Length: 129
Image (cartoon, rainbow, N blue to C red; front, side, top):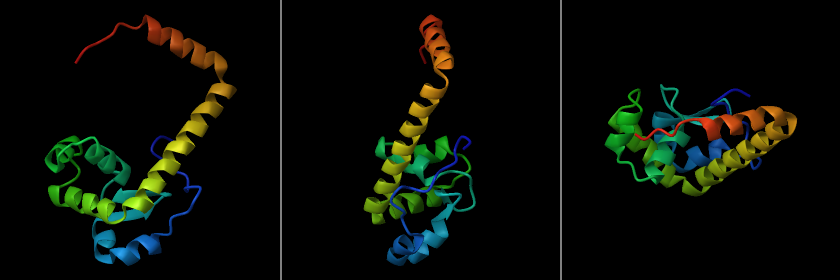
């Protein structure tokens, strides 16, 4: 799988279950494709907007971070998340679990690469923003 691609969650979330609760918002702001949730008309994942929101970023700050989105889309995505929080939180946890599994597998399959990466990380100068 490439960067940004998603696998189906281990506990499938049926789009019909989510859209039944908020059909207009689901169709207007959030769509499911390629195993993930995305803001309609963009390549921005719902995950990205939700994580920014959970970090305390304002909707305007999220728009600054994702210029492909408008303020209405961000508010719509946040409203969709809040209206479907349990299902989306499960989806996000499943995604984190899958990423951790894939990372552990890569470390097992390519130990020399990870030793080199760790050595490079220790020798790299630390930059401050």
